[in-house]
Amino acid sequence: MARSFTLATWNINSVRIRTDLVERLAAERAPDVLCLQEIKCPEANFPASVFRKLGYVHQAINGQKGYHGVAVLSRLPFAAIDRRGFCDKGDARHIAVTVDDGGDGVEIHNLYVPAGGDEPDATLNEKFAHKLQFLDEMAAWIGKAPAGRASIVVGDLNIAPLEHDVWSHKQLLGVVSHTPVETAALEAIRTGGGWVDAMRSHIPVPQKLYTWWSYRSADWSAADKGRRLDHVWACPAVAPRVAAIEVLRAARGWDRPSDHVPVIARIER
Image (cartoon, rainbow, N blue to C red; front, top):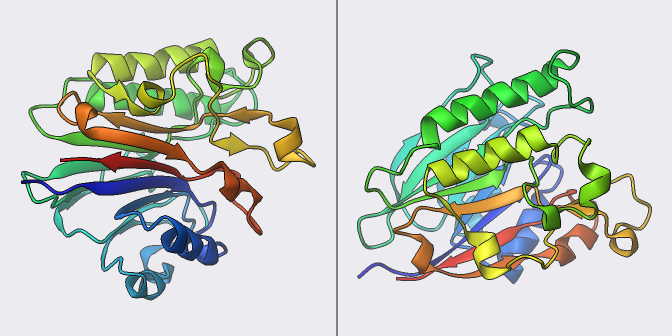
């Protein structure tokens, strides 16, 4: 019988600067599988030995000097590792592993979608055009029903799709990450692929749900102007196994924090 495991996703915003925060998460929550985004280093500079000492002996890294980068740290062995490129840019924005859960395995895709810059106009802003192209390529890839495999998609998707995923739907409609073109594209990918929004299954609308708070706010907690940019999607076969979701809001208040916080899912037998 398949074993239970916990899966965390976290945009760490430079893993070498915040290695101590990963250590703290491991000490306090001990996720079996940890998906990191925006590691900002090539594989050769990744602090692999630190994480091995924490029990994460299985590691899959797709890194890049100074930018982007994703990694999966796991206590469970990998049956397969895969990487996918997008937009012919050579950016390190995806890595997939199949973890051995004691059954047929679960395929986990760890993604870091481009932020898109500040101007939500693809004709004026190359970064926003890149983001829309990335979403188009995602749609052609995972915007189809999973082919019989137990699959999960996690990561910083850099879009808050629902009205209650942002502090002010009205004020953010023209702000990159919550514009109608982005939210419609992301929801089309999710629903077209049959993916279940596991976070909203456990923390339903109309409850506000955030995973990111800007560094620009002097008191992020009091202002509470957050957005849900980080996501956990499960295929129909896995969705009933997602027994719990926790957004570790307290991590935003740790020393030298990332502007994102970890999201932890418990996957049952």
